[in-house]
Amino acid sequence: MSTFKNYKLILPAHLNHYGFLFGGDLLKWVDEVAYIKAALDFPDCNFVTVGMKEVEFKQSVRDGSILEFEVTEIHKGDTSIQYEVNVRNTKNNDPIFSNTITFVRIDKQGEKQKI
Image (cartoon, rainbow, N blue to C red; front, side):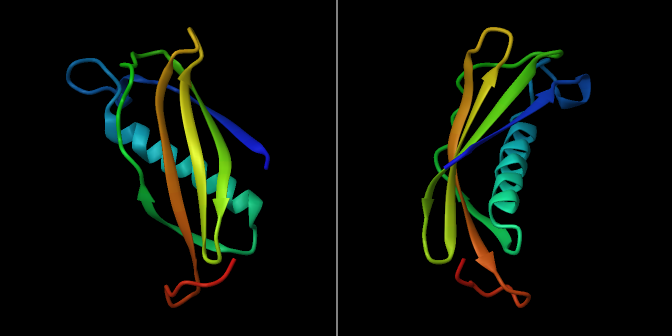
């Protein structure tokens, strides 16, 4: 099981009205980087996100921060794949967020399909 890393620069457009990273942007990026890992691991498969576990933001993030996203496969079922996504601030290596995300492989009609 290999690990995939990606990075994101936090810009003013990503901040909420208090000057911190908007949580919805972070969730979108977690979904995106995990999907990229799934697409690289299984290039002939179509996946959709079916769930994330508990959502808890551990630290606030400010403008100019660089976040590191580390994605690791943790479980493969017949039709689904799960990844752990860990997000850290590269400046101080503080953990920002972690989650388990589950994808299901689907066919062109949207029905589950074996991986």
